[in-house]
Image (cartoon, rainbow, N blue to C red; front, side, top):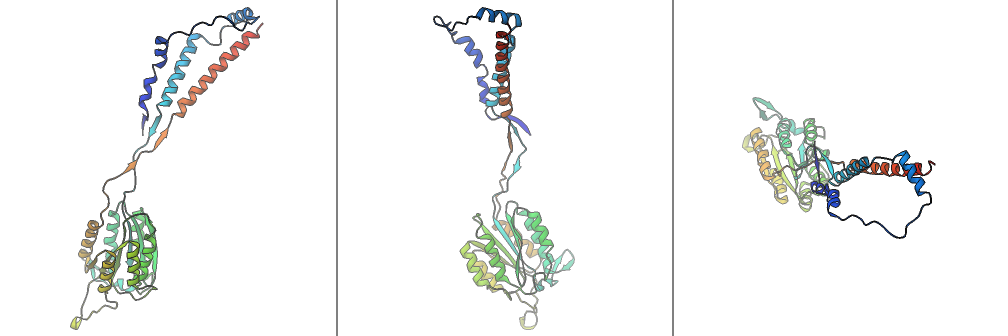
Length: 330
C-alpha cells in the first residue's frame, strides 16, 4: 500500500493566511455609535485578574493548525492498495464432453501407456482450460442426457477439477449430441459477451435425446453460438472398410453442425492430433492479452477535516467560557 494525495495542488493554499496578513489592509476601527456596557470597566478588570482563556500565541498556533488540517483535507489524502487484476475481456466458452459408454474404448496413447478416450480428453482439455485466462468457462457432460456440470465462470480451476472427476457412463451409455448443444445454447445466448463458443467432443453419433443435432445447430446459429466439433478416437476398420465400433462416429453431422454455426470440424485419432486441435483453437479463439486491473483506494480526508472541526469547536468553547467566567467573577 502507498500513501498519496488526490489533489496535491491544494497545498498552494497553505501560505494564504500569511499573504492576507501581509498584503491586505487592516480593518478600520469602528467609530461612532456603539453598544455601551455599563460594567465594561469591571469586566476588563476581571479579565485582567483571571487571565484570558488562552494566550494569544496559543490561539495563533491553533488557528494555523486548523488551517493546515483543512488544506490537507482538501488535498484528499488516500491509502492506495496493491493492484488487483481484473478478469480479461474474453469469450463465453462452453465445453461439452461426451461421457457415454463408447468413451471407454482404449485406443489413445499417453506417453507409452494405452488409455481410454475420456482420459485422453481430460489430459488435453484440462491444459486447454488452464490457458484460457480471461474466458468464462462452462462444462457440459453428456451421454444419454446432458448435464450442466459447471456454469460459466472465471474460476478455471474448478471447471478443470470437475472435468477430471467426470466418469464414463455417469450420464448414461447412449449419446445425446443434440441435447448437449441445446443446453449450451440455453446457457450462452443470454450472456452479454459478443463471442459465444461451444467446443463439442464426441466419439459417436446421436442415439438419444429430445432434439436432433440438426435442429440444435439451427438454434445455435440463431443465437450466435459458434460450434467447434471434435471427433475423438481411432477409427479401426474391418474387412471391406466396415467400422468395428459399436457407435461409429457421425462425421457428416459433426461437419454440418460446425459449418452451419461458423465453426470447424476436427478429427482427433490420437493424443497428438487432439493436442494440435486445442493449440489451433487457441489461435482461432484468441484471448485478449492486455491485463487490466484496479487499485483500491481508501479516502482519509475525513480525519483531518474532523480534527479541524473539533479544534475549532474547542477554541470557540474556550473563548466563550473565558468570557463568561470573567463577566460573572465579580
